Image (cartoon, rainbow over all chains, first blue to last red; front, side):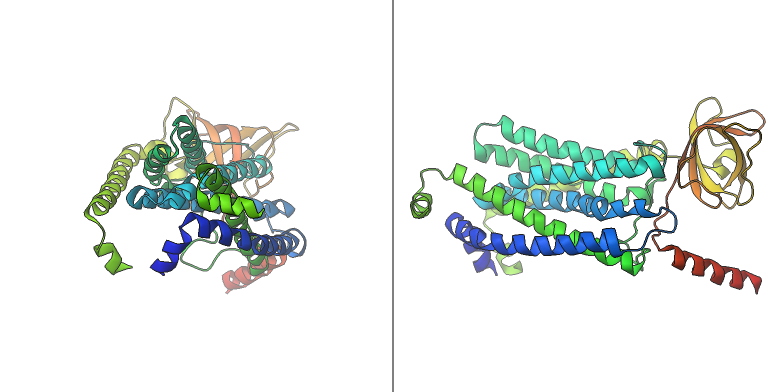
Length: 245
Length: 154
């Protein structure tokens, strides 16, 4: 396992294997997305209270999950980069930031669009919404800080520390609806009990969640390859790869 | 995995412990901070808080509760609505003039933003519906209701 990780983190090996993984991941993503969208928008029954408006959860909830998941990937790989100074970990960390920021914005916007007809307001400053907005600003901070420092490796280290400090926000987002009274409802799926959602509605939601995860993997690999090529300009392995193209 | 963690070079182990220390420190700081702001982070007061006099008297605050079944009245032609909110312990009458959100209905949780008048009526300027975490098709909701009614008839 460690041997595999060690091999995987070497730039030339990563570059070639990620190139071979991408078409498969893209195919899998398209299949899951098509199934999830069809299941969510067509076959799932309408909700007893919200009617068809509830269908926004097939985008909103997976996007919100991804916003937190990607943050953890960014912080943990940033930490690995800090401790072991592995180039690829630094690249994974910074490449995750724009993807995570996009998912966070998507969760905020879809939530707002749903909130207007259902709650009666676009936005309220309750604990869940506010902590998610802070997550968005954390992502922007990470991106901004990285670009403010000239040297890539110094920038990666500075960004990793910021990302690790921001980790404290993740449990706050998750538990905000339980610790404090909020307008946002409590957890439906991620709790230690039977999910309070009908099974026909739940399956497309989980499929969409997996599809979003795979989309993240695709976007991450593409961004990492891009960043790797930029950082490794002039190295021998890269010249060999480019000669073949 | 474990054995390799023990064999870490001293400099790496020092970095790892520094990082863990930093995350722990920030968590403790956040915990204290959030604890001291606990009341401000509460989005709304419950109806019991209002009856017990814990809610602010002179400025706007939010009141959350469930609309008691059969209490929604529309006196007159306008948009004014009167209803009673409860948290299953204490009740507070509410008055509101304006458009209600889709999810507003009897038996549903709502949050109203407004002021308490001297005679104990909460005059809302804004009413928000609080959605619960349950999602189900109408048929299931219908059959659950009949099951509940049977249960209460016994």
